[in-house]
Image (tube, rainbow, N blue to C red; front, side):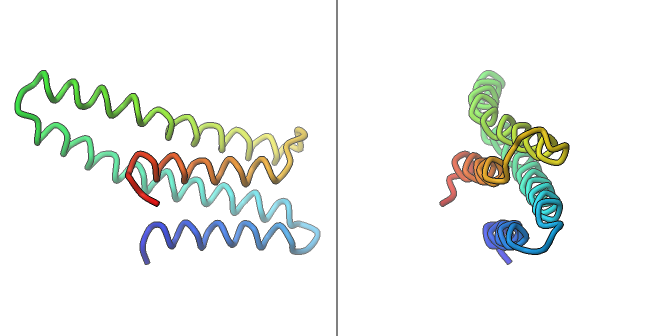
Length: 121
């Protein structure tokens, strides 16, 4: 299965859990947490290889430094979306007034940020 298909499958599981049983919120939060973990792990693997490629294809040390700096500036959006998603999931789990719609939006934002930097859909 492609990473995008796995992401969509995990997201659908989260949404299905929203509609089921008395522990739907807890199940949905577990699904959201697992989804962010999977997205983060997949991105980390790609990120490592991408940074290596940026350095290896540079023609000088200065170019390699510039390319890494530019890429890492763009990557900050992914890092921030992952941190925000974990924070919202934690707040929702502690019943701090965070609704499931905010959690779903945060999880979706993680995938959008990853797609944007990778050039995905």
